[in-house]
Image (tube, rainbow, N blue to C red; front, side, top):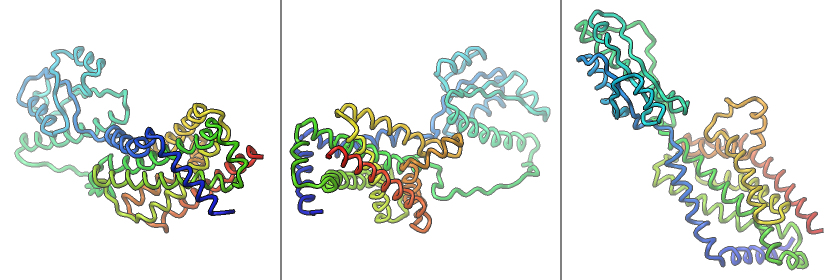
Length: 373
């Protein structure tokens, strides 16, 4: 194997890649746009819940209940429907996220020391968001209940209950961006490297230069290495760019080791570049390669644990996730970003990535060798 031939192949790839001015914004601007879009869109934080309030009591206690919701800073009363039917129509039309119905006997029950009912209707079409909104509602009602009991009895009453002192590690404010943005960094690196590599061989074939490369002294392994090194360098540069953007734009904490993160990126790229090369060898056109690449991207995304916990998936699907390199890279990148853990804790993920990457890359090399014969 001649490193001189590989060096010239790498130089040729960079010249060919940057000669087309349309590639430059794709390589630099596209990852930042994707990080911005995903970083702001993929967010489970609840900051503004639109509420429709039907107050059939119209008393001081019912106004205190309404003020308890608006005073939380999360709930915003946008509609005051006169009837429960009007409230249901607002929920059906998607104009409000929750409905609160205060019955006529609300204050009477409170003044007599009885349990007062209050109906909460939540839009459950997005179950995750609905469960978070309901939990916030329970917190507001607990606080309101304590205030009304203190006012009614003249002193604060304590119940016999477990006093849980909850402390959240690694993400004290439960900011969803701290969870999602490191995952988005991993997804962007996978997306760009997979797309660029999947058309690497196709471009040569469509441009009519593949035959010229075959008759050169380049060996198949030298050709593959020369094709992958430029995209490895570009992917690492994009990794550094989006990581800096995540740290300074989204203010994501970074508690771990930078060299360890880039080591994981290199091992992860072994899998993505291998899959991209394999797609490039089995495809006839760039369009076919792009369609095949997106066929891989969606399952990788869904089965990685990026949004949906793997433990909630069916057992058969959980076994399939072991073939997904993004699954292991997400554990590594979130562990390094948020927890600051090292190789002593993450070595199983590194080992799995290395094993998958070696197998995939070896398969791509074998397939490519057959096409050159």
